Length: 204
Image (cartoon, rainbow, N blue to C red; front, side, top):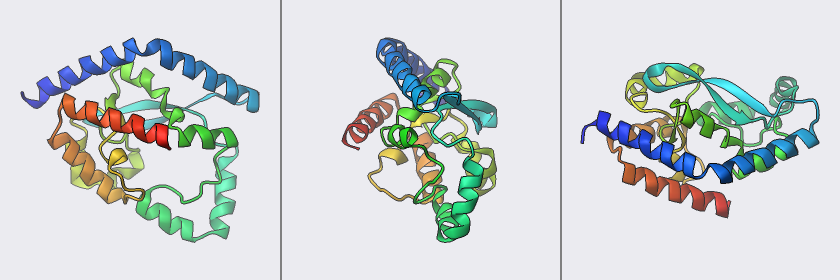
């Protein structure tokens, strides 16, 4: 089966799973949205950000909002006091401790509930359940020549590197793992990654 056929089968499978599970995940979405609204009335529930989609096209990637409204100032003050975090971010593209995160945000991130709104991206055919990470545009330079390979498929809610079993994976290693995923794309492989992801979430 060629890559185009695999991607078509993958999209049909994604759609079927998301629609079949809709009563469950829509209920969870409503509960999480209510909790965020109760804890921070007046603030938005959802957060959207431009990400790199298939063929390099931009799309709005949706998440539950997990950061404070004034997160930029909070982060600037924190990095000024903790310069080691700048080096950590340069390597891993995440902070060892992220001061921007709200209490509710910390919980929904640990349980990956913040990613649930991306199921709407799947229904809009902008994302897949499994795929490479939805990279940000400022990361294009570091991804380099691998961008073309990674964007041959839609980005995913979860992926191969997220279930690799390693806690700290450098950004460059993530890119290589995403390339490996595209090279070995299969629906059966996606199903295995989904089950591993569920296990990690339940145990995390």
